[in-house]
Image 1 (cartoon, chains in turn brown, green):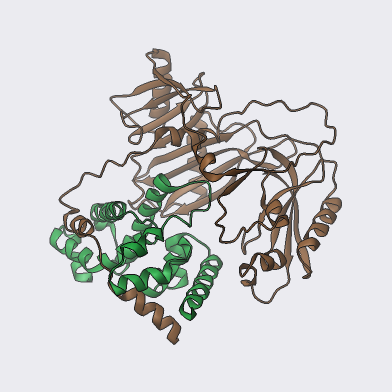
Image 2 (cartoon, one colour; image 1 turned 120 degrees about the vertical axis):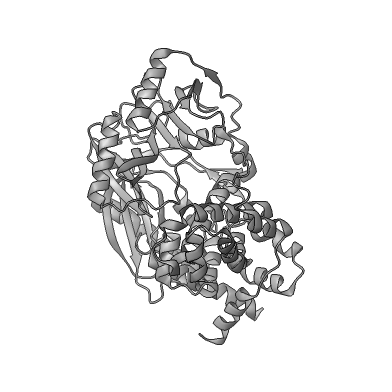
Length: 372
Length: 167
């Protein structure tokens, strides 16, 4: 290590002063087994989870005339944006319907959960939406116990969350094939895995598997906005499900393909030349389904997207479209030059562009990080 | 330390407490890189201790103990952070703002000043790399990042710290 690194190490290794409550916590952790009662806002959890799940009503024209999709974003102060969803229109009421109770409890049995006391409610999910659901929970506190949410027919699970799932125990090591088999078994028993849902990605962290199943669109593209995600661990041959989440919405336009791959590449090439005079290659061009975003807009308008301290949110229409996903990679000696400044970022950063397959507009993109 | 771990695995609470007293400074710094509220830090470390105690018998290799505890702590801190502090804007700004005003000791000031302008990923990687002496491979497993991402953050963090030292 050189002098500079030695200096870093020296500073880090010096003991820092800590408050009295920290010392107390260390000394008394085992005496005090009860966890502190940190309150979560259940409506925030419902908002974050459910706004990914429920349909947002909208009307999409049956005839596809080429109308522009992209509109200038509306600039909103971040504090206004965060306060927008305050849950004031949500409601819950208890349900005593035996049929509903039986249906929901059957799902719990399938998941290997038995609970002597359950609370069932009917409610709606968001300020913006009237969609209703049934919610079964096993604890008076929404942050504890089991949460199982279905549509009003009890046919479709919207989400399942097990707050008692312990991420810190050491689960059995199983192969990806076995994990996939387990996931499919559970999802099929829960009537979740319909046709056209295929495994898209899997991740294993400390033997807790997370598998995402995406539905293929009519044009055979994986639609991550119509998906199920399941996470679980296996212990003593028992599958312990942590959560099942569903994302589905009606924002997906399924717009027709009128822009060819070659045309899309030309569009991106011209745009990238506006940002950069450094040689680049097109290393990927494939069909995809993506949500419109402001990535390219920010580059065009020199809005700092690295180390951003911008307090504004740039609001655009919430739109999901068929796109050409095109990756641009620059020839450069040093992979880190792009982070020095926005100018160098625009010039050297590898980027993904989303070109709308119907209008040819660039409707978003993302940073093309290494191994991304 | 390994002796203490083995004793703790046999149920010796005193041995367990001694282990954590020995490493509590490191755990504090790691938690501080993510959350700044002192009560939340105490909670995160305390919950990590409880989780460790519950599962310590399953630990096969005592030499991996600290890495295991740090992984648990980072997960706890992330959970607290997501629950309490996550907003739609960039999350880097919530963190070190309150530090320098509460610092008195020179060692505290040096620590916080050095890390103040770093993003969370940069802070935690610097701490794990230089304080805990973990390799990039170890860090990628703890933080669940790929190796290039760790290297990138490490490079950027060093550059920022270097610029700070030269001010």
